[in-house]
Amino acid sequence: MKDYIDRGLISFFYPVSGYYILLPKIICFVSFKLSFLYYPETASLLAHAFMMFVIFAIAYAPTFLKIVNRQYHRSSGGG
Image 1 (spheres, rainbow, N blue to C red):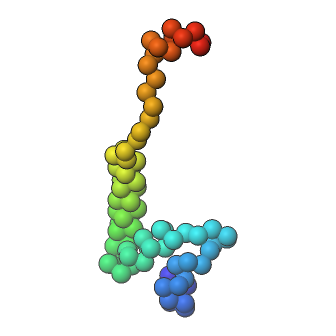
Image 2: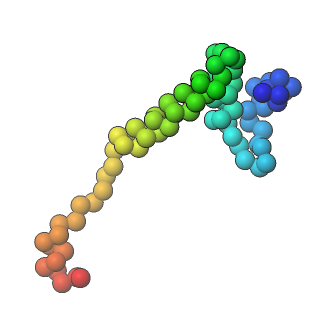
Image 3: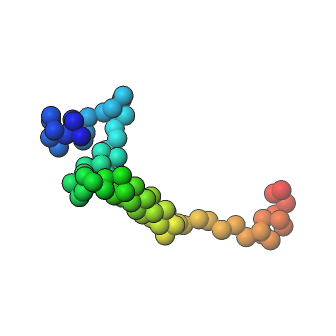
């Protein structure tokens, strides 16, 4: 939050130890804006909500996998 106070919104895009940590910075920013008193709870809730979003996005992503017919594969003599 110190970087945000010093530099503004552009501080979200500054690397920390060479890594961009955009999502944790955004979660912290939103949590502080919602309620300073309940910051730990709101930050945890937002982080869990994002993780659930990623899990559901992966689970419901359309996949187009080639299904191999096992009987054809065995009869071709290819192992």
